[in-house]
Length: 173
Image (cartoon, rainbow, N blue to C red; front, side):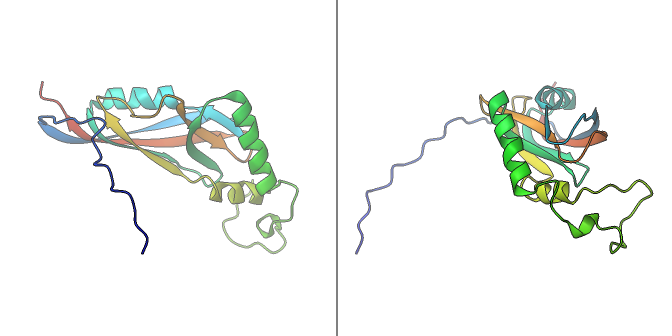
């Protein structure tokens, strides 16, 4: 029989009890122009401004890319790390590899007149995802000291949109 040490009782790091007068759901769509593939655009300040406009004091924040070749990630904003992450993504799904998605002689669905060969960007997206969810605490996105929210362009320069929804309680006025 394996014996384990007694578990220490977990103490809350931070608590808040708030009298709420209303529950609100607030949403905005933000627009960006990207400039190149594997571009990390720090959108943290824009997201914090949405939360401030929402008036939500305590709740949940959802940030979502409206695209399958642009991702939302929460990570550290350190330039060398961003270079490392871009390099790792390009190794996971290199742009120069063969992708059936890019073979327009066999592909028959979801085609447009301006279709581009971007199978690599879709595959890179698999490892990042479309959205992040973070708590709202005292009318701000509650993220760590080194954390930032990024829109990551995986394809090529183009207009992009990010949907932001804040849900939670407002304080009495």
